[in-house]
Every structure is written in C-alpha cells, then in structure tokens.
Image 1 (cartoon, rainbow, N blue to C red):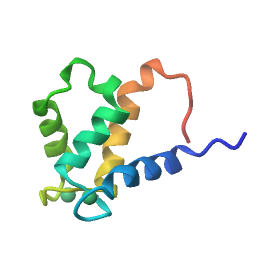
Image 2: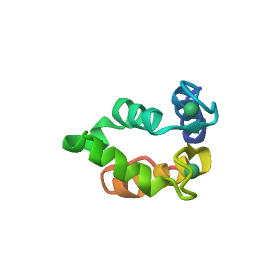
Image 3: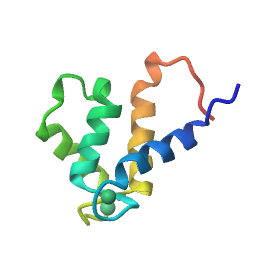
Length: 93
Ligand SMILES: [Ca+2]
Ligand SMILES: [Ca+2]
C-alpha cells in the first residue's frame, strides 16, 4: 500500500520541527509546542495552552536539558498510543 510505518511517521514528524531552531536533532520548548499544537492538537483538546505544553515538556525532558531528543519524544508517542488505544482499532506492532 506504500503507507509509511508508524516509526517512519514519527521520525518525519520529529525532524519536521526539530530542525527549525537550535539543535537540529532536538526539540526546543518552542519546537515541541509547535509540534504538539500542529500534530496533536486533537490530543491536547481544550488544553492548548502554555501550561499544558509546559507539563508535557517537563514530563518528556527526562535529562532536564531543556530539549526533547528523539528518545524522549518516543516516550511521548508511547504514552499517547497507550492513552488512545481504547478508541483506536489499528494494531501497531
Ligand atoms: Ca531544534
Ligand atoms: Ca532532554
């Protein structure tokens, strides 16, 4: 079918935003916010505010360097997959 794998989608999405400023391979606070609002607006729902973004950022930034690297980003995607598994009928392996 030619549809990219979930992992390829993640990598593509990550790099679409991570390259905008500073380190090309990490998401700054601003880049993460943009990614969340553009790609995951439906997940954030009514909480599209700075506080929600800050919370996600703090949750994700495991090593507290102020940037979200790809490893940390994957953790978010894992959490979202778990959170949305109840209303999703697609199996990701
Ligand atoms: Ca960056
Ligand atoms: Ca980090």
